[in-house]
Image (tube, rainbow, N blue to C red; front, side, top):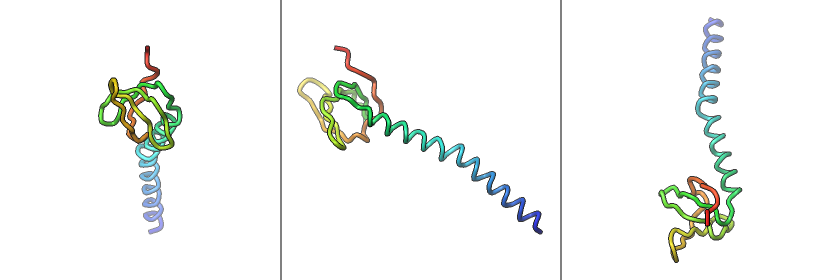
Length: 91
């Protein structure tokens, strides 16, 4: 009886370990990369939003950024709405 309990506990620990390495750990790494990307935002960076819009950061506030989408078109966007930073604008 104790061998079965021990074997069950070992299998549960093994299952939890696999779940950690294949789901939880990669998700934590992705969240850390996103926080680092948001912290490094600068004026003039070209970005892509979650909605697929391409724009250039013109101002950075505490929780939001001002993004120029086209000439005379600026929108205020939550920092969490940024999907990717492409780099500096090439003017």
